[in-house]
Amino acid sequence: MTTFEALAEVNHRLMLEDAVAAGIIQRGNASNLRRLRKSIPNLRGYWPSVEKIFSMNLMILELDELRFRRAQVMRERYGLLTNDSLILAAADSYGITCLATRDDDFDDVPWLTVYKPGDIP
Image 1 (spheres, rainbow, N blue to C red):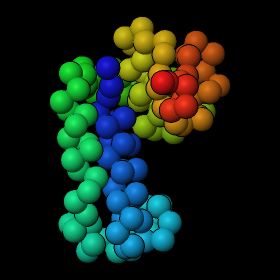
Image 2 (cartoon, helix red, strand yellow):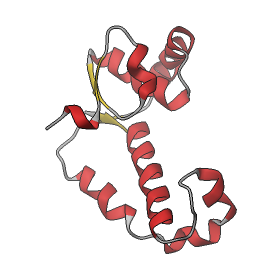
Image 3 (cartoon, rainbow, N blue to C red):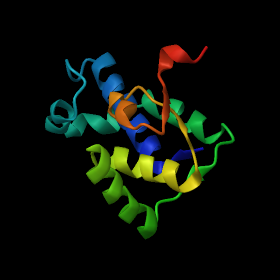
Image 4 (cartoon, helix red, strand yellow):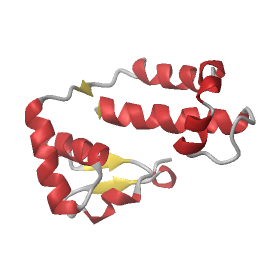
């Protein structure tokens, strides 16, 4: 299972990595790429990787008002930013207790087992 918010995060990070690899920006942060927005249409490397996710037989959890409201509870309880709180609200709503991520912000959620890229063979 995953969420569209998680897919957006993956897309974002891969786009930044693509821009660094293409020499468009030196460091992979959004503000650098935002200043050079006219280069974004030329980035082609990241999208095939994102498209592979859609062929992985994953259930993608849709965002609705109830989950959006539940995310506020997650922000208040665990000090998460918006997308992370939406992901955690989905986990809470669906009884998901394990999360694969490279994001350290989920480490302080006591009921969640967090797996990092190095943890999964």
